Length: 250
Ligand code: BTN
Image 1 (spheres, helix red, strand yellow):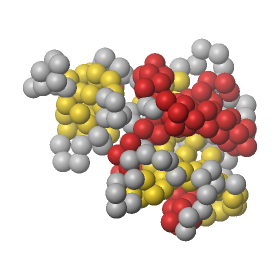
Image 2: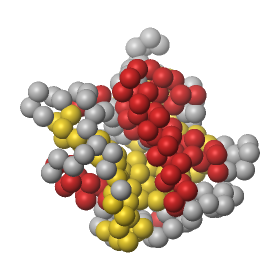
Image 3: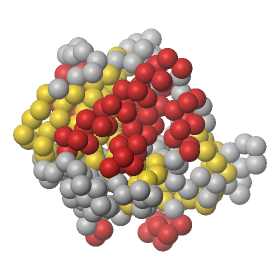
């Protein structure tokens, strides 16, 4: 574990170290980031009091499979949140890798990887951001956010990191030993919006349909008016909006 008071982005540090051949299980953790990055080129505001860390992994799997570990990490964050929040609080996983508390984003993951020439994985960096003490205002983000503290958890970053790592290593072992099915099943049991209408924003267009689940690689299955019932569209990258939010991307 490398603990820094401040850095640009723990993912950038971890990527450099991974490329230098640092061992699996090495973790870069910073109290705050000055250039925190989110998915799809977004900024990730990173004041102190929240969790910012990046895990270096060398999974023995084809590069096309390692995105599955994002679901394992989201599950581990969801389990951490459940154990810290008042009983009965709604905690859900949102495709691809967000964790929602009471329908507000509390955590996000940024997976970055490198492949060898034969398609095997050279390294995977799993960047984890969890709003522990604070969260951005609605006016500053596309997806309404919250934090563990705002939802009634009395905790701190160290506790959240410790719990997250315990849950994550268990799911990582399950994935390594048994593959994706158990991770997929557990993620689906916590999935937000399953079987419900959603809007998916892709790079160049937006699609409306029903969230039909995950395929065996973690792609989102979307039943649209144009896709046959047994042949949903497979979405591998995009942003999901639920009905209450779709006005923003209409
Ligand atoms: C997202 O939901 O868009 C992903 C957010 C990922 C943020 C984490 S914080 C630690 C790591 N370092 C970064 O620069 N980003 C990830």
